[in-house]
Image 1 (cartoon, helix red, strand yellow):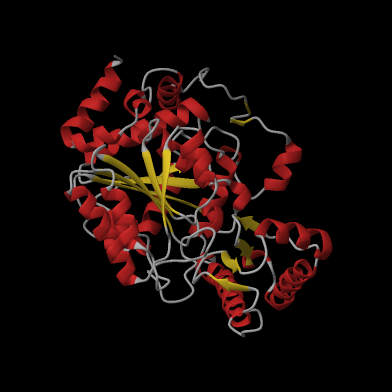
Image 2 (tube, rainbow, N blue to C red; image 1 turned 45 degrees about the vertical axis):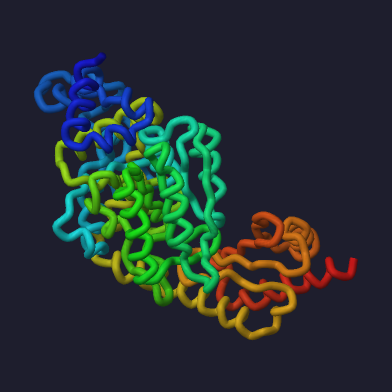
Amino acid sequence: MNSLLKQLNHTIKQENDYVYSMLSSLGKAIYFPKEGILSQSAEAKTKAKKFNATIGIATENGQPMHLQLIQETLSAYDPKDLYEYAPPAGKPELRSVWRKKIVAETPSLEGKTFSNPIVTNALTHGLSIAADLFVDSNDVIIVPDKNWENYEITFGIRRGAKLVNYPLYNSVGKFNAAGLKDAILAQKDSGKAVVLLNFPNNPTGYTPGTEEGEEIVTAILEGAKAGINVVVLIDDAYYGLFFEDSIRESLFGKLANIHPRVLAVKIDGATKEEYVWGFRVGFITFAAQSEPLLLALEQKAMGIIRATISSGPHPSQTFVLKALQSSEYTTQKHEKYEIMKNRANRVKQILDSGKYNDAWDYYPFNSGYFMCLKLKTVDAETLRIHLLEKYGVGTIALGVTDLRVAFSCVEETDLEELFENIYQGVKDIATI
């Protein structure tokens, strides 16, 4: 066994053997090589004052070589912040700023221990890293029945896990913490469960309230107390877009350090939070009570990155960092939040008018980008196709009854027409 790998695994076992048991076979085998091209290049960067003939980039006149036609469009940035490789864990300044952001937005983290965020190639990549580290074939992934379809690909198809569903809502339209608890406790024999939490939820746009949040934490804690090792993956893709009564911080804060058998992993990013979808900048952050354990998990995550994409794109990390450091950041972000909030509120006004009650109900929503209709009389896929072909309206069909509508990409003044089109589509199908 590689000596560095042996040391990493020894550290994790020594600091928390439950966490070592949570690792997949790949998670136990992966490490970040400290000897080789990257480490030798890093050493040369500080000591090779005459000639640095190590890393595979080209330089010219003391700067990374570049095409002027590209640099002209990026003239506000120094070439060293664009063209060089970013470190596998991401731009250090960006990691530091994002960590401060997490602390400021998550009061429950006070006094708790968690890692420095590692930069990922957006949220999907962060989920994929977590899957590689913690999921083996036939491991159970616990997700609500309303969930993002990519979970099936990332955890089910790619890693061979078994997805176990529970109803997202209980009988009174609140988060079904009892269903979550039952699904966790059902894994008593295997001794391991991976719980995936996504708030605001995709596709429904629902975020639990404060009491519901406490119930979620209690459900996970009860699983740990029953002897189950619980990896909690917190998908915070739409974090911050909370429009009504709901928790206002990530459950990462409440779940961090609550029990030795619980490992909380926050997966978030600038993608939706900062409205930079194409930049592909995300983060993965671990919470545990041991600093050596956190450092070992970071090294393993970096090993996954090194083995797959090597490192994330440098320019987009620089762009996000500059935005977060700007004096205009808070003001401009609030302006966009208000636009999103107004759209969500307008959707609720339209749906609560009673005009469309014969055609659909809607699932509770209070946050995020989406809401979801529950159709009463027509098939969702049939309606989706009809809306496209007759009205030029795009929606997402989920199962037989559910139709996801993204109000995030429709102007507030157009929302009433959107739902009128959907309603007319239902009526059209009913007469066929």
